[in-house]
Image (tube, rainbow, N blue to C red; front, side, top):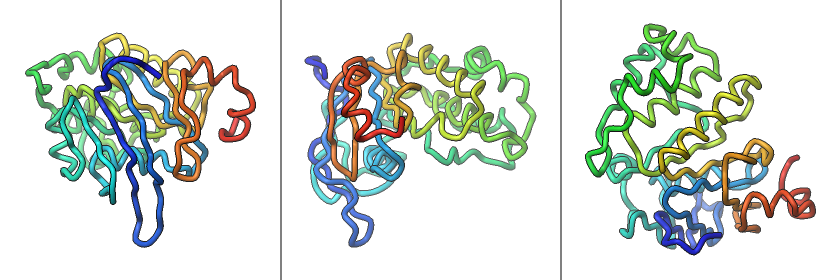
Length: 239
């Protein structure tokens, strides 16, 4: 997909849930500043791949390297300290705390001391959240919670962001807003992996594409090449 040195290199990882083999020798790479769409139908292994990278689920074998160092086997909070940010599919906001409290609890400088994302910058980038500063997260819609989860991730100033199904089940206006935000993030030089079922949502947002099916990588290329490959898209994606 790219000849540049990858900032994230996932090599032949295998993941089990109990006795069930979920990921089969999954490999993917992404260069710094690129956006990669990890595409696949529901249950294909997208979320498990994200969780394995973040250390939420252990890998049985294989290796994961970030910024030139092995990171597999480390806990999620250690991954966060290294500059990885994760927006899970189920959002996991603190429902009894306000928007402002959800954001401030996640605030930290980046690995290089960078503090590009402050509370003020977040409210500038997320005008909808700026109007809800004192609203408890549990009183927000699913789409609003998704925006809050993304904003909370950015408060940690990550170098790599894992977005798990950010558009799933949301109103079109919120999906458009999420697309706008991802394009804005691309302009800041952050690296993004986007797990999605919807290839069309990824067009104009991601540059590279990987398709996972039944726990195995079945396609690697650019998103533009994939758009022109109707056979692959029809076989592996719900479009």
